Image 1 (cartoon, rainbow, N blue to C red):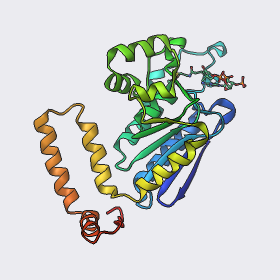
Image 2: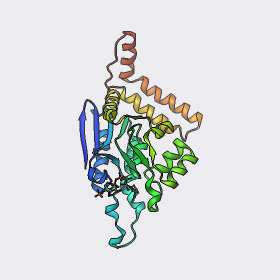
Image 3: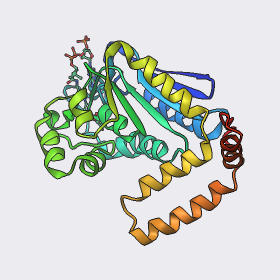
Image 4: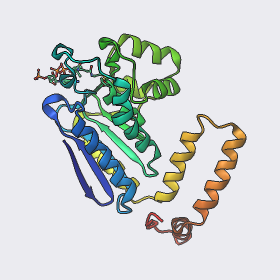
Length: 259
Ligand code: LHQ
């Protein structure tokens, strides 16, 4: 349900249930989490590229698995979040390597919010983002109330969440919700090149940068300055910093090893 391929330091994870618009069943949840865990554990992985197979990126939870007409006790969706979505969201944010997301088509419900948790999001111009939750009586999960509010502010976050109106890729880029919208046929080339370039970067420094930027949302200036001091101390001791400065002085391209 998730294709994983490692090449040149990029671990490409492709959500792969195209006939269901890559909506999440339990197997796909576990496979995606295993893929991100592999990116944590394997030093050969220096960037992740997340995308979807077929015409959609991800339609959120597979609602076919949740047919209330089948009867039984009311489901505990909080438990579904705790067991399946939340660990994956936390792993993406905690992974100290860049995660590029190539949104190849519609991203609905948790599918949209998983994209927003990634570090650099590119979307095909034809792709749209839908906070579909309100259509079925749910709240925006998978970090949606966190990411939408922080990125967009309350007015746009509320309107998107309460109306479930689709947001086209270009507008999402204009609003700063994603990095950029690109022509459909250029998406995978551009996202792949970006991930490949990040994978040749100073991985330790990139990971610390991600940690710092995420921490800024809740830190005071004093806390953030202290954290910059500590992280820069660590970056300054890395082999990649020595290589970066040496390459600059020798007027050549650096060869970062991710250490
Ligand atoms: C689907 C789905 C889908 C199953 C398309 N499930 N089959 C967390 C905690 C626990 C429980 C609940 O949820 C959550 C988090 C969530 O993510 S809640 C939000 C769940 N997602 C949605 O409500 C979105 C439902 N899908 C749609 O509204 C549309 O499919 C969109 C707008 C995504 C795409 O529309 P179209 O491009 O018109 O495609 P389509 O609707 O024709 O879908 C294509 C096929 O994919 C179709 O199957 P079929 O056999 O008829 O060809 C759909 O049934 C299937 N599919 N989403 N979530």
